Length: 261
Image (cartoon, one colour):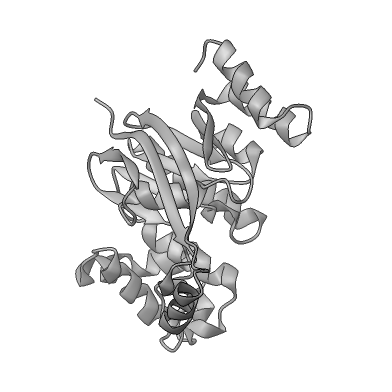
């Protein structure tokens, strides 16, 4: 039985309603008969399923709907259409820099984030040194969090969240934080988590990273599902798309004809 299944997931945003423009402007436009609500579908009819231990790479250009889809998978957002079925607990790293207090110290924020993820005080006491060491922030523990660079903040968030042993782990561009050495260490940590049996979803702009770490790939283009399946042929098609040798529509047709869909 699959640990994660999406069926016909579509997510709609409404722009131009009174919540965006304010009540006064809303009334004026209504009186002038110039009030229009626009719909924007961030994701349209996305369907796939993952088994325990799978690592899915989600690829696509900016605006493809990747991050929005992750919010639906993690339960932050309900799909407008379709449904998501999950088994087990989920740990999601979607916006690494959020949820911290800039006035608190690095150590205080580590405990704060741990509490937000459901870790006990004893668990944090026992693992705090490992968190700071992995994040390479030993010399910054007592500094205000706001003094850290964005990369340092992301490293701390990644280090805290990677301690949990989730059934489903969701990562949105988090393996791109830090320098090359830290990225390599992050990838090794992810392989360790995957090796423990966790199902992992990774959004990455690095096709090489997806090839190296994932066994399955989901390609989104302007909210639409181009292809889902094993990484080999699919990654080749995406490379051709990035090289402008084919369009997304041509890639979708080639994928469907390949018999791998």
